[in-house]
Image (cartoon, rainbow, N blue to C red; front, side):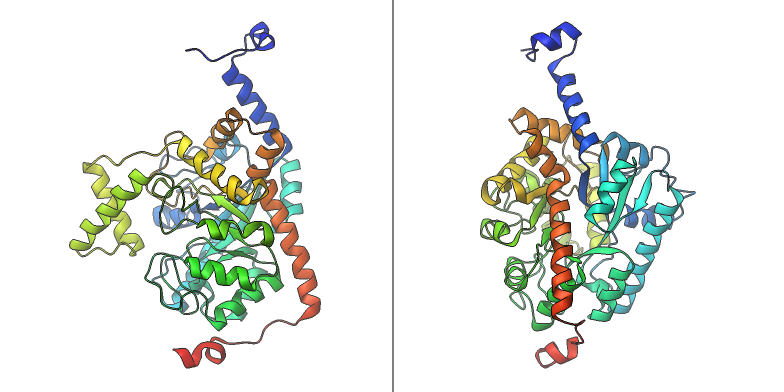
Length: 412
């Protein structure tokens, strides 16, 4: 059955599909699309030792999901670059590697200054969009990046890191991750102080990767909106990395946002079950699923011989609509996790694909105002609200002088 075409569209030879594409193009010209999580910096480390002569992003790059031409094609107005390091690194190595990641993002932004510009605030993102450039923001993925030190947290913020994901795949001494058996049950006393200090600084607290207990403890402590930079809905796909409904229900009271991710295992249960089975097989061969490099390599070898099931745009739409239903349209965003996983849904394989996702939402009746909110408006509001809260909190209390040893030492 052919797509319906309005009389106006027919008179201009325009199909419904091209009319939808034009609608999304105009929308993204007016409203910046802000993605919560992209792992290009780590890919640059792995593929080119951070050498942008080797990995020149000004031209299409076959080995990544991200380059400047595709950011343009995708209508991206702001990107949180993940300055990720594996949770298996000891504190001092994790801090050093995080600084290397920050240095790369700064170098990338300087080298491609005609296309990228540093950003820290919602106003910076809006300004960059008006200038026709992509706002470059940063998020540190995992509490290992602060080495159990609030001074390190403050220095990362000074260097431009806009959010801290409290854990990666492994527990940190003060917070439980989603992908290991519970140990603390959530946050320790020092972990709660990390949340408070982040919010005093105006650094967003990111609850992707953390356990439900950590999510709930962080929301109990929070005086400003939190984010999930790249997570989907547990009720739709029961992956431990997804967000339970009781937590989503708390977002309106907190003001936060869940930025739905595109990772196939997180949005499609058939893919989740297939990957879980591969993880069991890998464990039998001595490869731990939580060994980021080892399991990624094993999974890629497995995919070379066995077809991995596919997720679709419809799967991602289902998660976005579930978050909207449970938390409200003001509390959903996008966090693709491009260059951070081994496969992507059909039709959402790189950063050029955001318009296709927004078009799929439009086909389901989403208004321009709702599309603008999910594309970036919601996270920009969270950023502005977090900055306002920080202004208040800085008048109420000085920088925290607490240490891990003082607050948690007796429990170690």
